[in-house]
Length: 157
Ligand SMILES: CC(C)(COP(=O)(O)OP(=O)(O)OC[C@H]1O[C@@H](n2cnc3c(N)ncnc32)[C@H](O)[C@@H]1OP(=O)(O)O)[C@@H](O)C(=O)NCCC(=O)NCCS
Image (cartoon, rainbow, N blue to C red; front, side, top):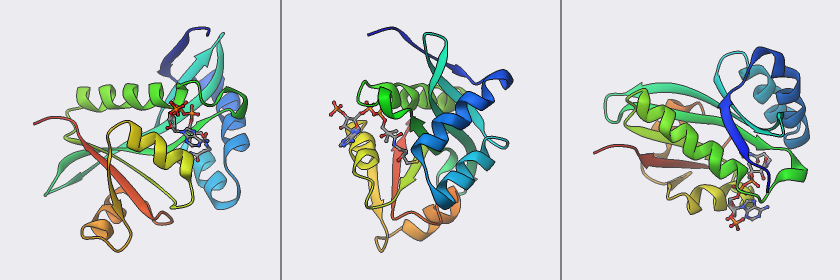
């Protein structure tokens, strides 16, 4: 497979990033994924110079956990899925969060999103499901209002 490059999205690539999001989300999720491009740190996965994947990141803080890097939305263009691109975007996000001195990285998804659940499980994230202890606090911390599962991973001791 051609080499995938992960780096910060450039202003000139915004329309390509929007295209990936439009192919990956619908309804409310699409609305917020497009909206959040303006307010998040965006990493892009480039294949032959074209944006094939994006991840939107922000940081938050709690007294209990310290700095928490949040994976807001992640998407890979349908034709390029199952090639490890999302996994690369996540490991690059983790590295970035470490460089920002975050203690944890968190993400969230709906209980019906099998691809996303398997993806974060494979990368060693712990799951906290709606109804379980700590879920509500994490939901507010990560702005995961519509989601049923929060994924969390410690970045440093
Ligand atoms: C979820 C998503 C980002 C995964 O992207 P990807 O580049 O295909 O993921 P990867 O290739 O890195 O997959 C890593 C692992 O995740 C799991 N996975 C990914 N897609 C899967 C699917 N369709 N079904 C089941 N498991 C899946 C697998 O365990 C996979 O490892 P494997 O290929 O060795 O079996 C992509 O499917 C997507 O853009 N979906 C729409 C947007 C979305 O739901 N985003 C997540 C919520 S914000």
